[in-house]
Image 1 (spheres, rainbow, N blue to C red):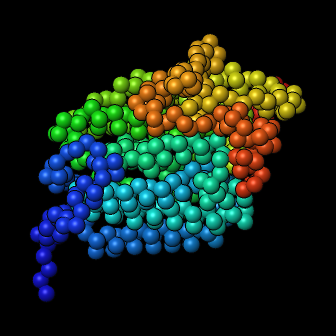
Image 2 (tube, rainbow, N blue to C red; image 1 turned 180 degrees about the vertical axis):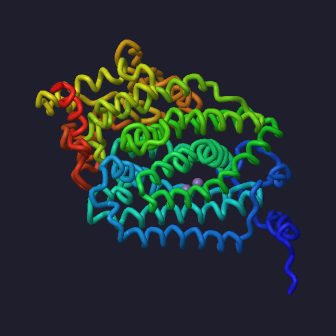
Length: 498
Ligand code: MN
Ligand code: MN
């Protein structure tokens, strides 16, 4: 039987718009869930996704991807890879699974919103595949760490993290709820499919999977690559939506959505990818510094994509470039110091050789971030481990929910960016985080940071033990300790002996 070429039937098959008889269209597609920009239906019908696929093709390819990922895992689960594995890499895995596995499940619900409320039939069609993609990603990233559970309870966070009030999870949830769970189909497509999936997931795909291969973790590298091949397809839902917005006089709204989401996602990726690349991965296995990677893959490419679409470079671009030199170094110091509050074992990993590498990649590192580690190193060398645990609580940003910090040393410029709204004072880490709040105070004003909760009575009494329990520490698993049991200071001992 002769079969038609896909291109002969595709346009007709995906044109599933109809004129509803029983309810008006506004009831079927309420603007707050569908399109709040009042763009005519005929305009949305011009939505043309660059990458086309039929259901038959989709299922065939996805089945092959899954069988490849699962068979690599099955074959390698008999290997000795995880015996005696460097805890730095184990920390990369624990952080990744805890932060990502159930976020993928949320992403499936986000895609489902486009499936149901997308004003364009081709958007609904493509998002159906996206929804199935994200379910697959959640399944992979729950199943793979499950095997590691008997070795280490920290892997339980792959499933449990999202159900806790751990400070790092509050940060992730605040951002993901904002861009993914609480937006209409169009704004969501711009924020998630374009700013997040086009803009930043390459960090994981190219950055983390290359490092995983260097580490010899082919199971993880293969899984990440398999996931990213889906992201690259459904990420293309964003640009046609932006083009239609610009054509219909909504450029300013599209620009704002892109800029808000990109900054929000950047703050998270700097921690989940930046710290692993520059600190957790053993020196011998690092391939690029996070900064080199950001400039090559994000700064240049994302900016070009934004401008090709007819938008502008985000207003905070210079601040972003500065943040690339700064943010993840601060957070490495912070997370390491508050290591009992996280579900992985962050290595300090700033011995003499590592510091040499950091100074080469980030000139001036020793004079700024190095001064923080000088004090810690001195305490560890002199058996004052207890002095490496801060007794205070850091001030937290009311947008990204991450401790407010900046460069130590001569270039010291730590400051809080404040904003008053309806009698409440909000604290922000940076100008963009404050700006995001002012774009939509109603959306953000009621949220309480983990520190707000200590003073509002939600964590009562706000003792260290209660705070840790509130965060899931000692409940899901014990908190973290230095991943290398402070072996990274041995190099300084050897230096002193010489
Ligand atoms: Mn995904
Ligand atoms: Mn996705």
